[in-house]
Amino acid sequence: MTASGDFRFRDIALPAYGPSILSAIGHGAVMPILALRARELGADVSTAAMVVALLGIGSLIASLPAGALVARIGERRALTIVGCLDAVAMAAAALTDSVLALGIAVIFSGMTWTVFLMARQGFMIDAVPMAYRARAMSMLGGSMRVGVLVGPLLGAGLIQVGSLTWVFWLAAVMSLASALLALTMPDFGSESRKQVTEHLSVLSVLRAHRRVLLTLGTAVVIIAASRSLRTVLLPLWAEHVGLSASTTSLIFAAAAAIDIAFFFPGGWLMDTRGRFVVAVPVVASTAVACLLLPLATTTATVAAVMVLIAAGNGLGSGIVMTLGADAAPTEGRAQFLGGWRLCGDIGVSGGPVLVSVLVAAAPLATACVVLGGLAAVGTVWVGYWTRRVDRQAALSRR
Image (cartoon, rainbow, N blue to C red):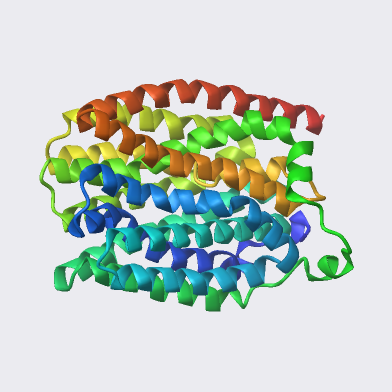
């Protein structure tokens, strides 16, 4: 790891953030239209929500194996391999005319995405001194938000001149470009991996750190679930009130700009004021937005609700990765991060699944109100455990 006095973000900018931007452009373009593509292929509203949920379910399936994989082959090789595999999944999604096949491609893409995120997190822990950790993780989250801003803009343009399938081809190209750029990053753990004769099992590492995973990890589940709601709830509500696919993509792009505006202040706050001050707004803003969404019936009001979610989400850019880096042990780090990623993926997959269940049983407006109430309760849990993290960090510095 570089010493704090010698560290400069620009020295690691391209290998650290380039692959994230490219991959996020593709995923950002796909996210607003995934439910719409399922609807185009004949899925009802509940099934379309489930297709979106499959992205998180794929991540969930791969979380623990991903930790073992990264521990064995390293971050650079993992990023290169999964970038190529994600390109295949996006191409398959573009070519299919079946909801089932689309769902399979989405699951596969989710599996590659969790390996990608875990490898990026591990690289940043090695590359950045502790004093800059939150800002580095926030910038990593911000780099993905740049992609999420550009992606929907490109997606909206492609939809206008072509069709929804063109967006999946864009995602395939971006994933492949990300894999090629990952080849330029240093492989920090190559020497240590050569010296390891026996890798720790994932389950042994998770057992040793089960208390952290069950408490702070549950807060991560809540944060991830609140973030995932916008990828399925907002497009469905936009369609419900009659907004077009291109308009929905533009709203997502505007919200991504808000995300980007808040990510660096959020990282600075985490490094200087603690994790609590940015973790709570992520969930609280989602709670308020869900409660307000049934009142949003125009383009302007839907966009306003999306901006509210984006403000809280942008402030908390990198919070999950930062908390994971704080909690991760030196020995068995990749395996622990696999468990940490599992917590996040439970939230990512659980949010859309919950939406799917609620809209199957009740009107969409009712689902929004229920989700808002659950997010309000979750805000209390997140605040309690992140406050404890800050207190423990303060004691360790004395």
